[in-house]
Length: 320
Image 1: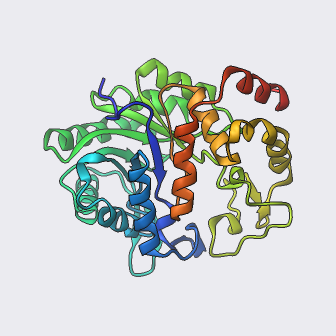
Image 2 (image 1 turned 45 degrees about the vertical axis):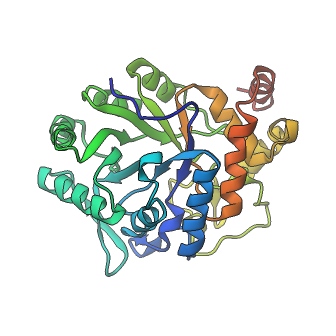
């Protein structure tokens, strides 16, 4: 089984937010306007502090996130691991998602387009982004991905899915190295962790700070704008509702705040420390837009995983 290349515990950087505005069905699914120079500075600061895994997608900002990441890693490409995704179609002129496509020709064209935007000759981890793809398409998609491995365009691949059965089905691929799924201390996913362990896959943890809730910057009085995906509160957005943090999740966060901030950690560092302690193969990818966020999140690697006592306290406080 191929593994995602790394040295020790991997620090991850989620690049969804740096893509800037884009939408689906006329509603924003980005994180608002961004400053590209600040994004580049944040990526470079993250690398300086030991963060080596960068996760993006061709749809984030309809290609813009890949371009910004490519610009930032110029001159240090060999020092980082780049993951991007395919499977959704989009229109750059309208900045809207337009559907899904996992045909052979589309996957090959999408890979070439991502390589061009990233300014690189290979993608370390290429993830299927379409969580709803039917299982009977898996063999065909894996065959195309294996051909891309043989051509040297990608090194490994996986599926971004929260379905354990889907992850297990995809894991049969000879170069399947990882599954990306939502995981944070408020919403444990033991079945997904078990699938990754059984098949020797890395677990790329999206939503490690519960869409920012575990950063501690949002309260019951916070209200997000319509240019932010959390402000639109789509049906799959559990942590924010009606443009505000959902009260039940704020209550859970409050219950464990003291434990997470012990030992000099910030709340975010404690939440990332929980993930580092949850399994040896977890790679959290918190969204980062600023140098300050990069610095804080990299601090989680310095503090390391939460200890067994803290992990037990969290389970008790959350009554799991």
